[in-house]
Amino acid sequence: MAEQLVSSWSDGKTLPESYILPPETRPGETVVPTSNSLPVIDLGKTQGFDRKETIQKIIEASQKFGFFQVINHGVPRKVCDDANGAFKEFFELPLEEKSKFYSLDLSKKCILYTSNVDYDKEEIHNWRDSLRLECTPLEDCIKSWPEKPAHYRVSGTDYLGHSLVHNPSVYLCCTQFLGLVES
Image (cartoon, rainbow, N blue to C red):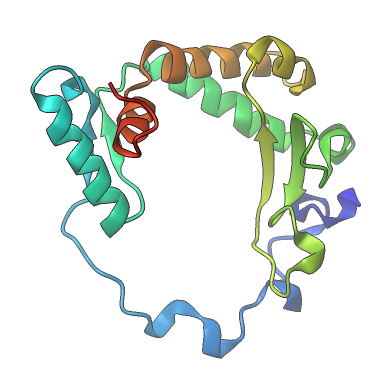
Protein backbone atom coordinates (compact mmCIF):
# COMPACT_ATOMS: atom_id res chain seq x y z
CA MET A 1 0.00 0.00 0.00
CA ALA A 2 3.04 2.28 -0.01
CA GLU A 3 1.85 3.38 -3.46
CA GLN A 4 -0.56 5.64 -1.52
CA LEU A 5 2.38 7.75 -0.35
CA VAL A 6 2.13 11.13 -2.03
CA SER A 7 5.87 11.00 -2.63
CA SER A 8 5.48 7.76 -4.63
CA TRP A 9 3.31 9.23 -7.39
CA SER A 10 3.13 13.02 -7.19
CA ASP A 11 4.65 14.96 -10.02
CA GLY A 12 3.77 18.22 -8.26
CA LYS A 13 1.69 19.31 -11.25
CA THR A 14 -1.51 17.28 -11.09
CA LEU A 15 -3.92 16.76 -8.23
CA PRO A 16 -6.16 13.69 -7.96
CA GLU A 17 -9.86 14.32 -7.27
CA SER A 18 -9.60 12.61 -3.87
CA TYR A 19 -7.36 15.49 -2.72
CA ILE A 20 -9.70 18.31 -3.77
CA LEU A 21 -12.24 19.69 -1.31
CA PRO A 22 -15.70 20.28 -2.78
CA PRO A 23 -16.28 24.04 -3.24
CA GLU A 24 -18.95 24.16 -0.52
CA THR A 25 -16.52 22.82 2.11
CA ARG A 26 -13.51 24.97 1.25
CA PRO A 27 -12.46 27.43 3.96
CA GLY A 28 -12.45 30.47 1.64
CA GLU A 29 -15.56 32.04 3.16
CA THR A 30 -14.83 31.02 6.74
CA VAL A 31 -14.30 33.87 9.15
CA VAL A 32 -11.09 33.25 11.04
CA PRO A 33 -10.07 35.44 13.97
CA THR A 34 -7.09 37.56 13.03
CA SER A 35 -4.27 38.84 15.14
CA ASN A 36 -1.36 41.15 14.57
CA SER A 37 0.91 38.62 16.21
CA LEU A 38 1.12 34.97 17.13
CA PRO A 39 0.79 34.10 20.79
CA VAL A 40 4.29 33.79 22.22
CA ILE A 41 4.98 31.73 25.34
CA ASP A 42 8.25 32.44 27.14
CA LEU A 43 9.28 29.18 28.81
CA GLY A 44 11.99 31.04 30.64
CA LYS A 45 9.15 32.27 32.87
CA THR A 46 7.82 28.88 33.98
CA GLN A 47 9.51 29.07 37.34
CA GLY A 48 8.46 31.02 40.43
CA PHE A 49 5.87 33.79 40.39
CA ASP A 50 5.53 33.84 36.59
CA ARG A 51 4.44 30.19 36.43
CA LYS A 52 0.69 30.81 36.86
CA GLU A 53 0.79 33.64 34.33
CA THR A 54 2.59 31.39 31.85
CA ILE A 55 0.03 28.61 32.35
CA GLN A 56 -2.76 31.13 31.76
CA LYS A 57 -1.10 32.33 28.54
CA ILE A 58 -0.82 28.72 27.32
CA ILE A 59 -4.51 28.16 28.07
CA GLU A 60 -5.61 31.36 26.33
CA ALA A 61 -3.45 30.74 23.26
CA SER A 62 -4.67 27.15 23.02
CA GLN A 63 -8.32 28.16 23.30
CA LYS A 64 -8.16 31.15 20.95
CA PHE A 65 -5.67 29.99 18.31
CA GLY A 66 -5.04 26.29 18.89
CA PHE A 67 -1.28 26.85 18.86
CA PHE A 68 1.47 29.16 20.05
CA GLN A 69 5.13 29.96 19.50
CA VAL A 70 7.55 28.99 22.25
CA ILE A 71 10.68 30.99 23.06
CA ASN A 72 13.45 30.35 25.59
CA HIS A 73 12.67 26.62 25.39
CA GLY A 74 16.23 25.52 26.05
CA VAL A 75 16.71 23.55 22.83
CA PRO A 76 19.90 24.81 21.14
CA ARG A 77 19.56 26.04 17.53
CA LYS A 78 22.07 23.43 16.33
CA VAL A 79 20.00 20.61 17.85
CA CYS A 80 16.86 21.93 16.10
CA ASP A 81 18.69 22.34 12.78
CA ASP A 82 20.24 18.86 12.98
CA ALA A 83 16.88 17.23 13.75
CA ASN A 84 15.06 19.14 11.00
CA GLY A 85 17.82 18.19 8.56
CA ALA A 86 17.58 14.50 9.46
CA PHE A 87 13.78 14.51 9.18
CA LYS A 88 13.95 16.24 5.79
CA GLU A 89 16.58 13.77 4.57
CA PHE A 90 14.34 10.87 5.57
CA PHE A 91 11.55 12.11 3.30
CA GLU A 92 14.06 12.60 0.47
CA LEU A 93 15.15 8.93 0.62
CA PRO A 94 14.21 6.64 -2.28
CA LEU A 95 10.69 5.24 -2.06
CA GLU A 96 12.01 1.70 -1.49
CA GLU A 97 13.75 2.83 1.69
CA LYS A 98 10.83 4.86 3.07
CA SER A 99 8.29 2.17 2.18
CA LYS A 100 9.75 -0.13 4.82
CA PHE A 101 7.93 2.01 7.36
CA TYR A 102 4.58 2.29 5.57
CA SER A 103 1.78 1.00 7.79
CA LEU A 104 -1.62 1.90 9.18
CA ASP A 105 -1.05 -0.32 12.22
CA LEU A 106 -1.16 2.04 15.19
CA SER A 107 0.37 -0.57 17.49
CA LYS A 108 3.71 -0.16 15.70
CA LYS A 109 6.22 2.24 17.22
CA CYS A 110 7.13 3.81 13.87
CA ILE A 111 4.75 4.22 10.93
CA LEU A 112 4.78 6.14 7.67
CA TYR A 113 1.40 7.00 6.17
CA THR A 114 -0.32 9.40 3.78
CA SER A 115 -2.96 11.92 4.79
CA ASN A 116 -4.22 10.30 8.01
CA VAL A 117 -4.07 6.80 9.42
CA ASP A 118 -7.71 6.28 8.41
CA TYR A 119 -6.90 6.92 4.73
CA ASP A 120 -9.26 4.22 3.46
CA LYS A 121 -12.19 5.79 5.31
CA GLU A 122 -11.54 9.40 4.21
CA GLU A 123 -13.52 10.97 1.41
CA ILE A 124 -10.94 13.71 0.92
CA HIS A 125 -7.25 13.17 1.65
CA ASN A 126 -4.64 15.57 3.02
CA TRP A 127 -1.65 16.25 0.76
CA ARG A 128 1.10 14.92 3.01
CA ASP A 129 3.16 11.94 4.01
CA SER A 130 3.73 11.64 7.76
CA LEU A 131 6.11 9.65 9.93
CA ARG A 132 4.83 8.90 13.42
CA LEU A 133 7.43 7.88 15.99
CA GLU A 134 6.71 6.69 19.49
CA CYS A 135 9.33 8.10 21.84
CA THR A 136 8.81 6.51 25.23
CA PRO A 137 10.34 4.48 26.58
CA LEU A 138 13.11 5.68 24.29
CA GLU A 139 15.36 2.63 24.71
CA ASP A 140 12.56 0.43 23.29
CA CYS A 141 11.14 2.79 20.69
CA ILE A 142 14.39 3.94 19.08
CA LYS A 143 15.01 0.43 17.75
CA SER A 144 12.06 0.89 15.40
CA TRP A 145 13.12 4.35 14.16
CA PRO A 146 14.70 4.71 10.70
CA GLU A 147 18.40 3.90 10.43
CA LYS A 148 18.73 6.12 7.37
CA PRO A 149 19.83 8.79 7.11
CA ALA A 150 22.68 7.65 9.33
CA HIS A 151 22.27 10.50 11.83
CA TYR A 152 18.46 10.21 12.12
CA ARG A 153 18.38 8.37 15.45
CA VAL A 154 21.12 10.49 17.01
CA SER A 155 19.55 13.78 15.90
CA GLY A 156 16.06 12.68 16.93
CA THR A 157 17.25 11.48 20.33
CA ASP A 158 19.22 14.68 20.93
CA TYR A 159 16.20 16.82 20.06
CA LEU A 160 13.88 14.70 22.18
CA GLY A 161 16.29 14.85 25.10
CA HIS A 162 16.44 18.62 25.00
CA SER A 163 12.75 19.20 24.42
CA LEU A 164 11.25 16.70 26.88
CA VAL A 165 13.91 15.70 29.35
CA HIS A 166 15.81 18.94 29.87
CA ASN A 167 12.86 21.30 29.57
CA PRO A 168 9.42 19.73 30.00
CA SER A 169 7.87 23.13 30.83
CA VAL A 170 4.97 23.16 28.34
CA TYR A 171 4.11 19.56 29.18
CA LEU A 172 4.19 20.24 32.92
CA CYS A 173 2.21 23.48 32.63
CA CYS A 174 -0.49 21.76 30.58
CA THR A 175 -0.72 18.74 32.86
CA GLN A 176 -0.92 21.04 35.87
CA PHE A 177 -3.73 23.04 34.25
CA LEU A 178 -5.62 19.82 33.43
CA GLY A 179 -5.28 18.72 37.03
CA LEU A 180 -3.17 15.69 36.16
CA VAL A 181 -0.37 16.79 38.49
CA GLU A 182 -0.49 19.11 41.47
CA SER A 183 2.78 20.97 40.93
